[in-house]
Length: 429
Image 1 (cartoon, rainbow, N blue to C red):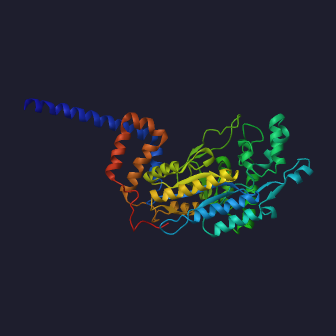
Image 2 (cartoon, rainbow, N blue to C red; image 1 turned 135 degrees about the horizontal axis):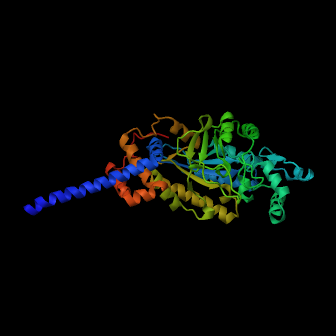
Image 3 (cartoon, rainbow, N blue to C red; image 1 turned 180 degrees about the horizontal axis):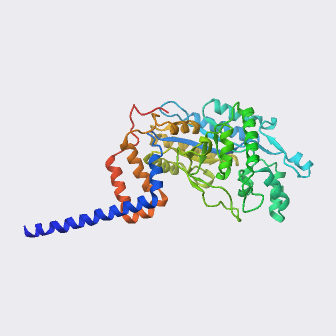
């Protein structure tokens, strides 16, 4: 009995030390990362998993592009969520390519555009339009060109040797595939005529956005409300121009990059971004930070793992992919479409409550605190918040070495699966 009594103060002291340690760690977390903690708490929590396939770089191309777009549309239409909605792929539309013949006639002294309105591209435009009407495609802005025309011309004339020759060969090939351009030149919303890059004139940016809006209006009967910055490089002047010409949503990788360094690499990000945050002119951001690039080895299993993570975090899953995955030789193209089919089937099998929607509709959900797809109960929000903290890269080391990661995991487990309840009363898409 005396030993037991003697042990009580020891146990009490140990408990006090443990509580003090966790208290100090929590205080350090709040002091060092308070803004991130608050931002993750404010970020909306979804009550159903949302999956959107986001595909960039579609625009002028040969008839083969139209054929693969129709094949993708059939694949998407065959997979439906419990509300009967088909899977959706957004198309980041590039409005034009160089008119090489006209530019050659001018000695490459000026840029001339050949837009998606040209008769040669009618099959591609028709495939896009049919997919939109079927509810499986949703067009998004991805630049009038996938480069800044003046920067392209400047680099063409300023560079010598192999770089200049590579640009000329690209032009001689018709300039159909922006994917073949050097990465710095693909950053449309910054001047990469020379490196490091410099910002573009805001008046020129506004004019370019207006031109793009007018073309998209002619192509699709409306200018899309969603913009995807080329290579995710943009700034406030770009946002202001977008907002002035009808853009309400910007797709981001969770960061904003504003330029490129002397080696052509992206500068360190200027801003951390989370779903539902706002920018210039009331623009709202969505985050696309998972990938489905079959050419780079991404498979359905990778998407399944990303979906599980997003489910636990109460976040939507936006998959980034590009046209180049689907336009190669027939075997590679067929393999990419087949992997897309397998990915969607696996995701729906894994989460029967999966919701298919467009990015514009997702942004509406993020804007509306009363949306039935957003969690209102504090337990659901708290469970998602705990998981978000554990998965936040900047917090990993502190959480791991303080032991808070294990504590957060236990707390999330005790709260139970409250983020996604597979209930008949769960919100419709």
